[in-house]
Length: 156
Length: 141
Image 1 (cartoon, rainbow over the protein chains, first blue to last red):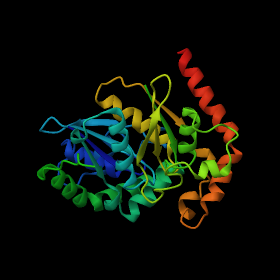
Image 2: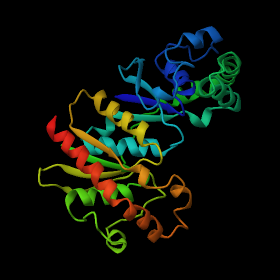
Image 3: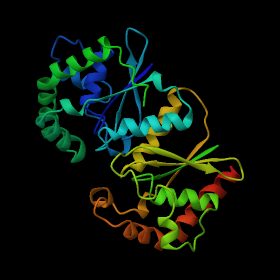
Image 4: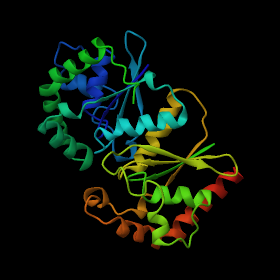
């Protein structure tokens, strides 16, 4: 199965959730800033990277986990991707899309905007890291739900 | 091979482009002919639906897809999604979003269909040229 975490820019919330899912981060311990910055793609993706589906790793059930960015598409992202899957004849039940945007807090938005959009990394990065730490339990809970529930979003 | 025309709703410029491709419309089509296309300017509230429009004389399946104002990144995502399965599926995406104003999704409920049809009608030749260029280029590769 392919599990795709998606957020606005694919640089913070989706990366954090996917990292918990693939055990790059422990789900029970709030990571340090250093640990977050060691994650692939964390606070790194810029506008030119948007849309690409990036591989993050495999979980314990050998599901492939990815992150991507979808700007302001919201729930429409999944609808679009499932339409593409239908056109291409891909198996819908092997795709799971998880929106991490509802768990993003104001600090992550402000820090992410400053760091990624404006390129003010020195100012934005500490803010987005602080926001990620605060939101971490929610991302952890989200991943837990994804892992424990038999989420099969194949039906359109 | 499949051809997917992209626009914000999947029912505006992409629908017109698909019918131009299939020869159901010509580049001198009237506003009424555009308005009479099945599903024209519908489903703007649910973004992301695809519509199968038909098959051309070279057996290419023609679709439209609504991608809001994010055609560029959705095309990238769509290609990557197919690649995840390691399949080589020949899908050509043709972006005709620029013929629908960016504000359309916000005011489509109050904007008369005739107004969007007129905007598209005024750009029919350019839309046709995009189709012709995309398809001709494709045939040479």
